[in-house]
Length: 284
Image 1 (cartoon, rainbow, N blue to C red):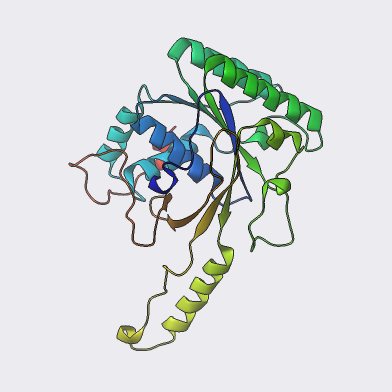
Image 2 (image 1 turned 120 degrees about the vertical axis):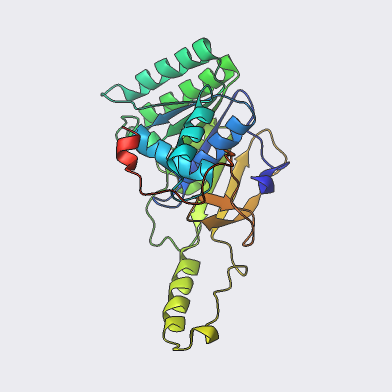
């Protein structure tokens, strides 16, 4: 996204963390990064463990086409665009971490892939209190990134606090503190829950006004929908906090309340909205 240009870079040989509370947008943010890398001609390998690959691709396609329900031809165009850009796989079994590294190495050697995403660390087969296991795995990821001049992005959960109404920092990330020590970049995505409550309250109050012409829209510009906060960037000069607005139709984070979603896949023949699609069937 343009607001991060010049402030944040995903450099070769590094590992980044995307942290956040459940439902605050870690996977959507990872999808943004994947699409941005693909647009620049990069190849990306995604270990989808939070969602089944077909569901992950469904969400990615929604972001790529910048609409809730693309027409069937638009979906086909998106998947054609994905070819030779994205490799998505599901990791199963007890030795998930070992298998994941094995696949990453193969992808780097066989296809020259240099960007890797793990969504997320909690699904890699470690017990919550297995701090040594988590530390050793992240250590192996940093070695892998350096060996192959790759960049690895790992989604991680935050510890549950008293409330989601305030942003948390890197000290609130689940697991051992050694994880944030070893990686190069730490970003936290926070969804503005207080604003969402205000929006719902405003909507309920406006619906009580009988004359629809007298109803006032909610002021979206006053506060952002989310904050993307960087608490570490080892090889960068900035640790910015970036205000974002969320478009629920496209699952995209935008730089301002009047910004429009970006269509990563251009397809002029597609209609604005397609007929009902059985997504599960289409991605089976």
